[in-house]
Image 1 (tube, one colour):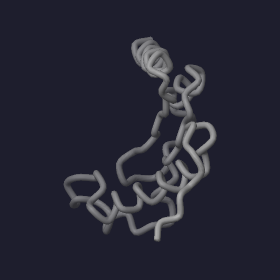
Image 2 (cartoon, one colour; image 1 turned 135 degrees about the vertical axis):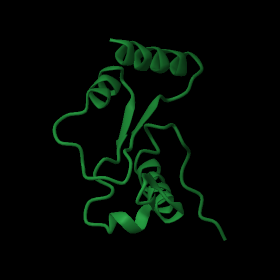
Image 3 (cartoon, helix red, strand yellow; image 1 turned 60 degrees about the vertical axis):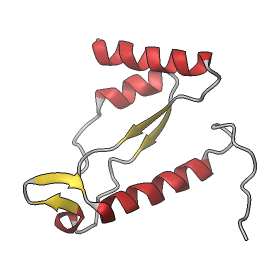
Image 4 (spheres, one colour; image 1 turned 180 degrees about the vertical axis):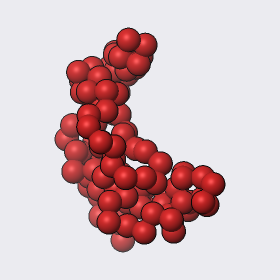
Length: 106
């Protein structure tokens, strides 16, 4: 109940400030979660744009993308993969995010 209320409130306040509410679903460098993740369903029901990155680590050498054997958070290379995927998703959803046309840099 608390997570659902919180995501609804974040979406509401975002819209009040003329911002697009976005939910980034990202886990540590692990396998894709089995089954549905409630937070993703709550974000969808709140009307947030959901960027689901839970499958980001599939088919990759997970140990080489972790901080260490003691910590499953992404290391610098792992975060580079996250950033590249987020950049792709932002570009794919430019209209929903109310971004102007992509500017080609020289």
